[in-house]
Image (cartoon, rainbow, N blue to C red; front, side):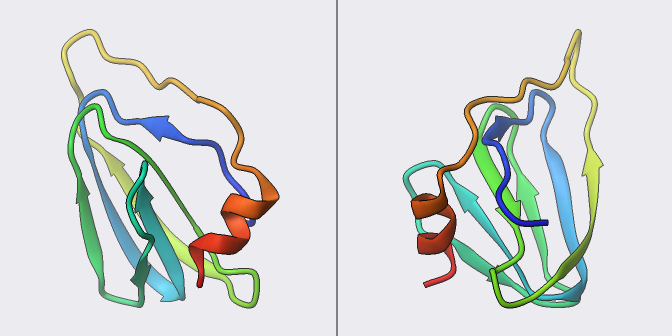
Length: 88
């Protein structure tokens, strides 16, 4: 997957790792390692990102929880330095 954009979930979401290794990171917080079977509940409005470390792959299910009059909003791209720092 590589680098991603930051995004807030308007209605919240559930992220489930089904294979490989990945990470989940809320804005201004340390990244959390995810392995198969791990799940993260993403609260509504929380700016976050998720992806695979540079040396792995990450297969996941992302389930959006609908919000009233909600839509997705993609924010700024994650820089190479931010991406590389997440897996450390």
